[in-house]
Amino acid sequence: MTTYDFQRYLNVRNATAPSFGPAGDRLSFLMDTTGVPQVWRLDEPGAWPRQLTFEDERITFASWSPERDELAFGMDHGGNERTQLFLLDGDGETVTPLTDTPEAIHYWGGWNSDGSAFAFAANRRDESVFDVYVQGRDERGDDAELVHEGDGWLSVAGWSPDDSRLAVVESRSSFDQDVYVLDLETRDFDHVTPHEGEARYHDVNWSPDGEALYLSTDRDADTRYLARLDLDDRDLAVVEEGGDWNVENVSLDEDTGRFVFGRNVDGYTELTVAELTGETAYRELSTPDLPRGVTGGAAFDDDAGRFAVPVAGSDENTNVHVVDAETGEAERWTDAATAGLPKESFVSPDLVRYESFDEREIPAFFSVPEDATEGETPVIVSIHGGPESQRRPSFNPVKQYFLNRGYAYFEPNVRGSSGYGKAYTHLDDVRKRMDSVADIEAGVEWLGDHPAVDPDRIVAMGGSYGGFMVLAALTEYPDLWAAGVDVVGIANFVTFLENTGDWRREHREAEYGSLDDDREFLESISPINNVENIRAPLLVLHGANDPRVPVGEAEQIADEAAEQGVPVEKLIFDDEGHGFSKLENRIEAYTTVADFLDEHV
Image 1 (cartoon, rainbow, N blue to C red):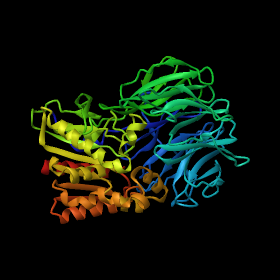
Image 2: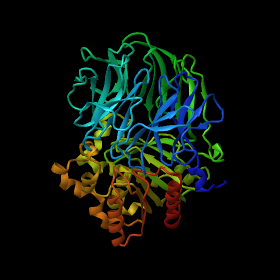
Image 3: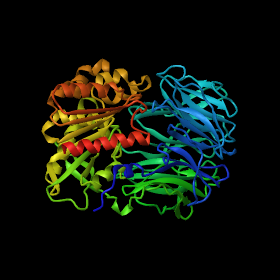
Image 4: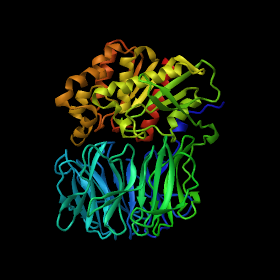
């Protein structure tokens, strides 16, 4: 089998985040051809795309004005997540800053109906809370009007059809949100989702008549379902049941009542295209003819005759497809390059389940190289972050590189992962944290029984919370591992909670436990306090500007492990944050991983 250089894999491109222009004849999207995501434009499928932005930093979103030939976009600096807003003309000739508060985070909240104003949430007044602002399209800098002072983590979900109100979401944790309606004239902030216990409210859309909101929620249910929330009587009526799987990525066109939603079935997206025929009744229009994999949110064109959606698969890099809503016929508009790598060389996983310590079945994706030799195949156990996240069958160039080099790849969705119901996500909360680490140990036992696997060459690798899981696995089960790779991971829950962004602390304490009530427990499970157990060589990678998991987490675990005599390598990027967005840094980071594993595994 032909082997390929790592740089080739890291040059595989992805086209995401589509948005149609006001006349429906232009499609913008983000693509990382230059090494970081930039705004590109297409006027027809398969045409040569036109690059509209040429920034050194990543673009985080781009949204066309509803009536003008221009887009708003967001950009931070060095991965610090302090996104600023900019205006870009449709030909990419002029970029105009809309905000000028570089110490604050700005969350885009959408254009009003004629593009004369936009809304956003920002923590300008107080770093720990987000307020709601409205700014005229011709206003600049700090001219935005503060329309609501918040006391938590707020984001704007969108304008009502008559532009008189904003839907606003407050997030207290990953599993508990509330929705409010802000009247822009009276400034009344109406709580429309009072509930007991925890409930998630995602994908908030205004109804065409402005009398209701359509959203996905798991209130009084284990999985998220599609619901209509009446704004007068607060009645929450089911439109589409969730059943065993979450409803996600709901997009509704306010003018026509057409909508698209996905159902997350064991990680794969099953898409439905429909049209409202009543408050909770609809007729299904089509089943899109798309590659099997994972789709993002849909963006309708001007008359909702078509919608654009990004699609990725394990063996398909992300591209934007445009779907005819009536027929389901789909056409791929973008052609994100695969750096000359033949698609037939990409490996798709098997979906497996293994039994953990309490007889619970844990789902996982397992990929094995085609030419694997019995009993000699090393395995990378790749652990996702979150923990309220899910490993799904989308394209991963790092995985495909290691598969090409003879490694198998094991991706478990341990307890605490999203995608399998509310109860499953809570199985690792606070004092149950280490049960999820035990799921990793059970996965390694399962791997040891697989005929292709060499049980003496198993690697733990993960990022963010997944980095904590790597470190915890190395300290709790030290004899299982040939090596560990910690990417922007948590080494000490106490210092992490003390130093993470003020706006995130309460949100994270709801998952991990609080410094006031659970400090002793958090110290007991922190890998830094069990570092003497580590046996395997350790590689630690981090961004100096990380606002989520401060770089001190990497420095302390690398230093302490080295003092214990563990072979340790540390690599810090001065111009990155929580992860690596710049191509040259990704190349350096992951070639370092490859060299490290070549040496130790």
